[in-house]
Amino acid sequence: MKRVWNFNAGPSPMPLSVLEEIRDEMTDYKGCGMGIIEMSHRSKEFQALLDETKALLAELMELPKDRAIVFIQGGGSMQFVMEAYNFLHARAAYADTGVWAHKARDAAAFFGEAYDANSAKDRNYSYIPDRYDIRPGTDYLHITANNTIYGTEYWTFPDVDVPIVCDMSSDILSRRVDASRFALIWAGIQKNLGAAGTALAIIQKDFLETARTDVPAFLQYRTFVDKDSTYNTPAVFCIYTLNKMLHWVKNMGGVDAMEVRNKKKAALLYDTIDTSGGFYRGHAEKAHRSRMNVTFNLADAEKETDFIARAKAEGFVGVGGHRLVGGCRVSLYNAVTPEAAEAMADFMKEYQRIRG
Ligand SMILES: *Cc1c(COP(=O)(O)O)cnc(C)c1O
Image (cartoon, rainbow, N blue to C red; front, side):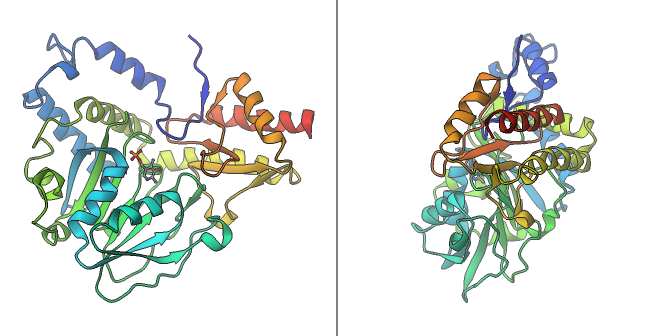
């Protein structure tokens, strides 16, 4: 078996050991004589899996006691709708840091006033603004912890007087974060934590109390909390992969160990860019660089297609930038190994040596 160097932006690589464990258990989960995707979501085995998954997440993220964890189908895009449907009573503020922020704001506009509290548009979303214009009567501020497409990440979180909703889809569990600062954290799990098909949401109970009640049951966070994510059939397989990934993170040494590993990987690529004499140009301003998505261009734009094709031919997958912005993007989520980052950095140096 030959596994490629996988830098896909999402879905993205999983650790080989986790994949092998999933394979081995596929036909017989814990001696049940059937696989996890063949059994009832009301079985004691699945309930135990669900309980353990929530406990592991709470432990790894050091969540305050008053947070409820739920799993909701529909990915990040469903969360854009749900956060606004539940919590936007009058108006909500959105930090304009890129494509995902726009999608969040545009989904919210169906439910009330959704406005930009700032904007990084003036420098093509290469930084995270540090000022917030919060209007009176604002229900919450939405931020995107890591901007997957532009490659910027928050290194200090906003200090504002309204509840903060944080989209952590692309950097959850990649670093230590003070979860108590957020009224609602949610993340599609397919980047750092498992198979596509569910999002996890972490809700402060007092904030949940403020949610609208005139919302269809299936779109209320309250329903998922009250029914422990099993109001209807949850994404069993996704939750199972999440459970495996959380065990893996814990065995690797937890969030702090992930952070050390991710710093090292990102440094390998950013150093390559910074010492290339301008051959490679990083998109994000240095102080706002993402450790998860390294975005860059080749000074000679005409070489970009060739660079991406050469990379692919040598087994480096997923190096092309997002279709909306072009350029190059190397995603370095938790499961990406330091060896993979090193191989990519070596490839970039070699490419410059030959074509520079
Ligand atoms: C991928 C992503 C999303 C959307 O995820 P889907 O599950 O595809 O809807 C939302 N926000 C961020 C920051 C993302 O990276």
